[in-house]
Image (cartoon, rainbow, N blue to C red):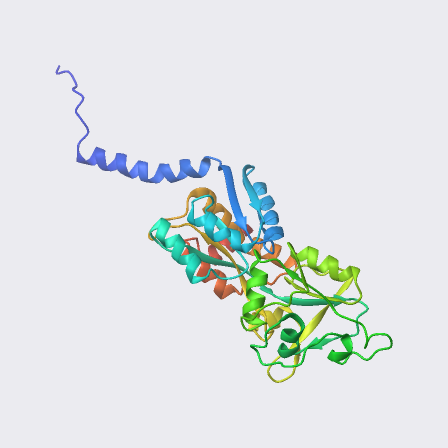
Length: 330
């Protein structure tokens, strides 16, 4: 009887090995829990959202943490360019100079990912009778220059037509964001037509600080992000080109009818053709999902329309929304 000889694997054996590896490796990767720390530097306006998203990311993946440094949108571009962080939270688009510095250091442009919609909002004390402002009046309230075209200076509430007893002669106290803020830069560009702020605008480092200051002073007005109202203040409508007052409601923000609507961005350091690393992929998969956008609504901002969500997911090579919705319901 001939002895049975063991032969080396042939072509079929090698094909089976490759096939099994192709099938099993993704399953093993899925079975391995994510762990590690993500970091974000940038916008104060986005700070609360980032914290909430971070908590939900940890609920999904208990060994993952998100560290948030909400020091202002202006701090995001240099941190991204220098490789200090891979996430830069910004309440305004990068300038050409900021984008050019990133490209000079990294060799490719950063990826801008819209994550929510916001509106630069004018707040007054809750007792203030003022209901609406024109764009020209906003410029005259906050600017030394008159690039938008409004000539007269506005110094007292009576100059705005507020004639309720005891209000017409009251002086106006102004609050705004500091120069590191994306809100400051965008308000300067859009509301002041690129002009200069008045020297008596009190600049503070956070949106919540602006709203708190306005709530403490009956003569005050200030601008901040949409998601920061309190019981001590009220929102002032802005009049559009036809003179129609527009509040920053969901519909007015999504349609752009509110004059100072803006997207909120997360800029990410992602080279062309590359996929997101697992931790970043898990984070964006959450943010750009129905669960993540529900956080946006609860924080007082406006969720992205479904078309923009789908576009952002495609740009990051994430599964389509239909797949995410189906998997979350199973």
